[in-house]
Length: 453
Image (cartoon, rainbow, N blue to C red; front, side, top):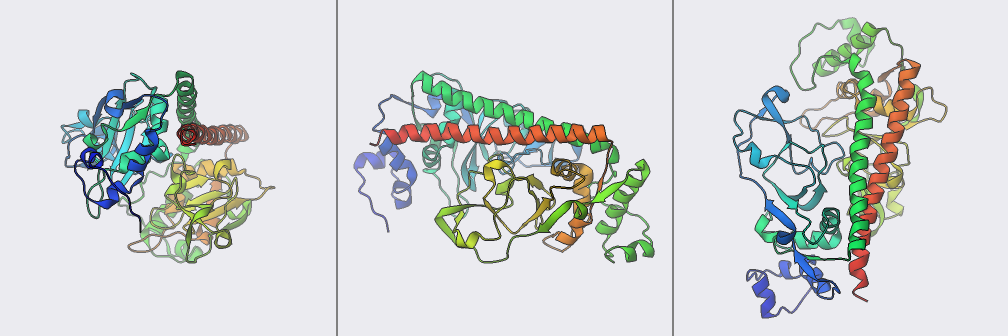
């Protein structure tokens, strides 16, 4: 049990809140640390030209850009790939302009999972965001926008952002709750160092995602003309069914045949994933005991984030056996949301990852590189190949044997080399972007900690 004495001024500054959870949260404790700041303090409302979330509205989803605008949720904004394939109706979303996101804003999740921050780049430009996002538009009056983001994304900023949460099962914060959030005005040279790291990190992410798109574009000629989850009808022979896994479900039979026909149509040879790997397996199914300090643990949703190193879960070294992943492994989600593939970057090599990620370990002497296979699995054909093998009713699953038999088409040598070069650069840029963002946030935290000595 925790206890703290609160003076009358503490109640006044908290809108007369009497709940102990507020006064014992990290926010009030951070304010005590900021009171020792050798620098002047400003507030979020002063440093932003506008802080808002948008009106609650009814969402009508449609197919494609012809009828809709790309839509962004609070959970999507923190992902490495923010393109979720959702489109909100142009015709029936009259308040879209007020919900549209622009470059160089700071987005803050304000419902459910609170306090997650994202510094927007050109990939966010024009997307319609949910009303459950607080938009902060920096004006750089006293603090640079990159420094402002790093401060809000730090543990101290997080504590201040989430201190005023309210609600029972689902927690919320509102724009007016964070308007008075205190911000230390660091020396210009320190702000510029932090700002440069964040802006370079943002630029690297954009470049990394462009490299990935350019690589997988070479697989576009192998489209199957079918979106997973949509309806389809086709005759499938008994011979075809009996020669495979003897499955009668339509998604497997029809999508699998479309993939096979696509490869036959262009006359490409292929290699199975099994032939290129030294192992395809999952982590152990066991009870996980989380600890305060230990091996960082990633769920399948966390491993897909733009910065997967910002995990708050850790497991003990003894319990981590079988969960640890290594650089260069391909991780594919096998339960719930299927077929999302992640390349294990150097920055989270050695982390523990949930057993819901299938590990694909490409062997050293493989004919096809891990970069090439990764690009294929990220393409529409690759993802369709993964999804066609799903099974289950309420919760869908994939298994290792099916993934092992997926056919990877062999493109021309020049195209293979092009893909490998793009993916190598994609991996390097993405890893550097994460390291730079972490460095900027660490500089903020170390600066504040230095005042407490």
